[in-house]
Length: 136
Image (spheres, rainbow, N blue to C red):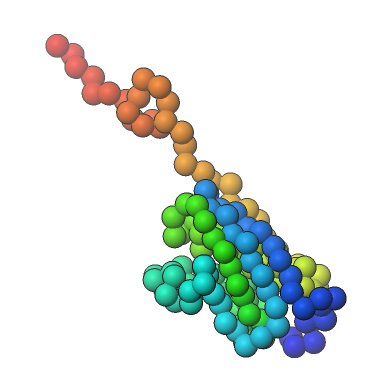
């Protein structure tokens, strides 16, 4: 897969979103280093499942040790941020090489997850919770 990296420029930039999190990612040829908010991915995302989520597009395209990733993430929680970084990495890889699009589309890495937190309604305690009914 080394021949897949025939990019027109050295660096590709993309944006990813999930819940309330937004990630801006820069991808360029390198040794496989992933930094999130100026920290190592293992240090920023403590849970192994979140680290796996971030690495999924790179492993699907077999480019783990061929590209470096620098991500800036804000908003939301850690799970939302990991999903945003995953989408941003996928989009940047497609900008790097258009032939990767079908592979990443099959893995569902390019689709934005539309699930959001439901808003609180007036007259209720939460989005759906009602006040306790009192018969007497």
